[in-house]
Length: 178
Image (tube, rainbow, N blue to C red):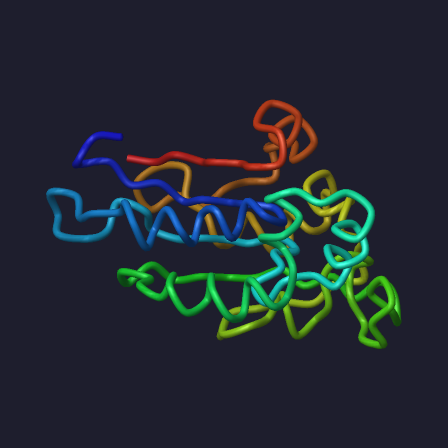
């Protein structure tokens, strides 16, 4: 990234945690004095972990699963990844189901409301499943597009096909701007 560029990050699930860590550890200021990441938009990010990771870890242990467990995210990640560097965060929260794995809390099937919302002042709830967030046109139009810019002062328009963006970028979408 060039020191004069700005980007908006749109990240799904663990990509939101990775983006938070990136902002905390790596983001500096561009030539205009503002952070080169202008906005982080999270889709179903387990900001306080996911109880589903506890079930998966019991069957197949591994570092990515461990790093999604509520105990790890709350006790280790959230205590060490604290510097937002002035970057605003927004969170799309799925509320499609009354349970998240075995937890009695509404969520998107993987991430409970309280985990996704965490400390974000800008959040929106939609009846959407975790696995549908990156390809849902309504989620893109209503939540993502108003929060990202595609050029100096220009907001994203509906001509973007979120399915194509998700396909091209995998689970982690990065939209750049000048």
